[in-house]
Length: 506
Image (cartoon, rainbow, N blue to C red; front, side, top):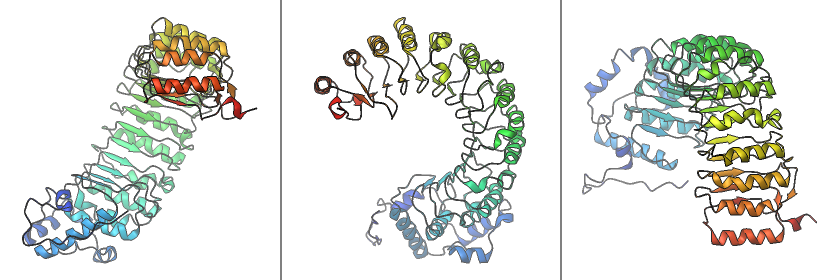
């Protein structure tokens, strides 16, 4: 990234020519006196978290003494400006976003030097910086300077155990914290109590994201015990932590105390049939839940057969993701019975559950009664011709009117007759924006006459922008039809067929 040239203020500079850093630091008490600085240092709320002299020397900070002259202040501010410009970042009030900047240890020291100028900072994001692991203490030992911090994102920073411990200590001096994201840091696993034990009753935390943190079963049990303390929690994401399946009992018990929870993500967490029963008992206490993700838990299949009753109580649920869960036919029956009591359901994902194939009729009531449904994903469900014929009939009778995204990809067993029936009726989905009927990566097939019906349908879909049909082979005549369509129709419609033609496969 290019670095802008250094600017030197002149005597004739207008007051209206506010510098980059001045705008960034708007509202900060930069002109405070020595007495003000002493008063802040003597503040009893931060006195127990003052950094040592040795730490300040190590971090090469200018914060050990107040900036006593305008010259010192101007010099420091110019350094800060150069630092931010070097990273290609712009000033935003109350927000410092340095994610994916390839920060080094030296950069971290420069960033920490900014903190004394940011007493009103509310958001700090240094995610996706792989080289800062082991340096978090440079920030945490100065965290008392930004005690108004509400959002802290440290995803994929290769945090060390010492980093985790230092952050746990620093949490005490940022009582306004509402969002904490530590995802993709493997050393969080096994050390979660060190990190979160300082959350106290009345904590303001609303979002806690710990995706792929190598959490242990003990960590999962700790989360369960912690949840009753987090009364304001709205988003909990523990996805891709395969070892917490054994502690679902503790987590489920804790969830009963999080009545404000709106998003629960347990994607790929090693959940089993028993886990579903335990979670179902907690669903009755989660009346505000909007999104539920239990996807990629392959041992979950069979768990919903007798345990979907409380799922029906989630009247505000908008998204239900159960893709790749090895669901059984009985699971689908139970889910259908529950889903008809979910009037707000907008997103339903059953992809990669092979039992749906040949049994789409089991979902008939869901398809008819889910009047708010906007996204339906049935990718790789082993759908048959009879399934898409049923779907076409549901569309023909005026249901699924609000559908915007429909994914039927990787269902290679549907014959041309099935696609013809579907394409003759898909034009009735007036709000549809995306349709995917792509084949599996290992499969190539010639487009049948149904392709003309699809082109005709697209002309009647005012919102459509994307048609996915990868690995369908277009003969020369259909390729010409598509080219003419592209010339005559809105250029915003994209047919993604990979550019393959029948001639490419002699």
